[in-house]
Image (cartoon, rainbow, N blue to C red):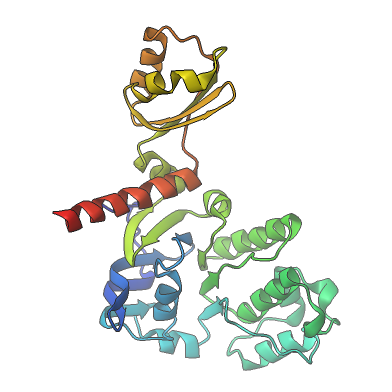
Length: 316
């Protein structure tokens, strides 16, 4: 069952209804229903092949759905693009190699219906120091920041980013997400696909989990972590823990067990029962810690549960 975040009252910047996209026998997107609203920052997560890039192509009008409807601001995505309401930074987006960064940004401004002043574009993208540098000599992280500058060269209402911080160092990432928060505060909708789950946890108002073309979760990071239904238990024992493996695996609630040296790590779907049983078994844990899963662990748990459910359906 999909988790759904609280409903918004504003008209959606993005609306997908019953969207399916097939390539021959492969269904890349399978029954996607989704709305994004003004001022939201939304992360799109999913393993490779989940349908993330196809979903972004659909909402940008780069491909048409096999079934269902896609709308941006209540109309055809291509109309929103032509009006300059959308800025996109895709993995496949190339940069002209034989120009300077300033010339690249100026070209993007010239092509935009509502251009921003060049100095403002450079500031928002954090590339003031690169303006005279040849694009061909940029590092991977610098090129990403220039692609972002091209995406926001004009006044846009929706920003779509596909793996935006790939190649950036920690400082560049922090400055980039600071700029994204600024965009959201100005009322713009930000949608980004990422493999850096820590970014989604720290930045996004909503997190979408896409798996095998289906939307498994649509909620805050905290709600998704709670949805996984598991908690982490960690402690040390004075005994050699490998000798106690059968005892530990038999504890109630244990879903996963990891042993190493004197340390025991457990994922449990009933942490209270597990901890009580540890003491009832005569074990004396040291440094006992009980915590919820991080977003990465919750993401893996949700997708694994989906795979297991699909496997059971096929077997039946």
